[in-house]
Amino acid sequence: MAKSFYSGKSVLVTGATGLVGPYLVKSLIENGAQVTCLVRDLVPDSLFFMESLDRKVNVARGEVEDYGSVERTVNEYEPEIAFHLGAQALVQRGVRSPVSTFRANIEGTWNVLEACRTHDKLVSAVVVASSDKAYGEQKKLPYTEDSPMQGRFPYDVSKSCADLLAQSYGATYGMPVSISRCGNFFGGGDLNFSRIVPGTLKSAYSNERPIIRSDGSYIRDYIYVKDAASAYMALGEKTGAMKLRGEAFNFSNEQQLTVLQLVQKILKAAGKPGLKPDVKNEPLYEIKKQHLDASKARKVLGWKSEWGIDKGLKETADWYKSYFASKK
Picture: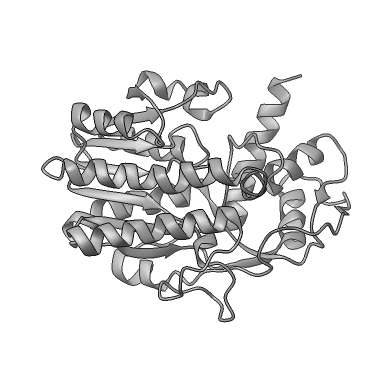
């Protein structure tokens, strides 16, 4: 087996207790990296703690909104590569609490970038996790990396700003930084049941009708957490080698689905295709149609989705089935 690019490398991860973070951390560990995670809260239900990943990495306590904590972590643990996934990641929470969302997603991003710039003799690559929400609403679909950053709602604006900050540090300081733009993540370990995938599976395994808050016609780009982790790993490897300076990449399996179509796929994966969704048709502060063109990632990075929607949903459904059974 060929030696991994990450073998023996010191790596920093923010957002390790989130949805994608644990999968990235596991992949880094499996590839021989020496991982440090900046962790704000003890979250027992996070896979990071459920699978005892905290015992396999260095855990630095602090939050991305505090520059002192970020700078100390970079200075003391000396990462060669930094993955910045830490964020307030819920759209509706952003509507309720815009200021805390702006602080986490905007100030948190400039803190990570500035700490890495200050210690540029240590850090050879930075990967910043942006989002398809950073594009805002566009007339032309699918989004390409040339589409402008024009978020309007609080969460979307925070991701537009974070994305532009990463581009600015690349352009101004020649920082080796790249930007990932993914769609909606799904996978085992997401216990925020306001999200469509875990919420639908919770209903399915309770033999209840799943709730769709919108009219079901909203189009979204969905990406399995293992595909997302592989995207971050590819960017971490290529950013320094290809001298990327603020370049962004869309990551997608390029299979667009309405919310109703996704719910039907989830119910099939859970073995509950007979359940009929309860469509609430409530107004949402969200964009109607979003999907991504991932051709740049394929051509430049050689990346493509390995799991896709159906395989990813089956693994996800199996995870929740085991999880709910363990709670009885």
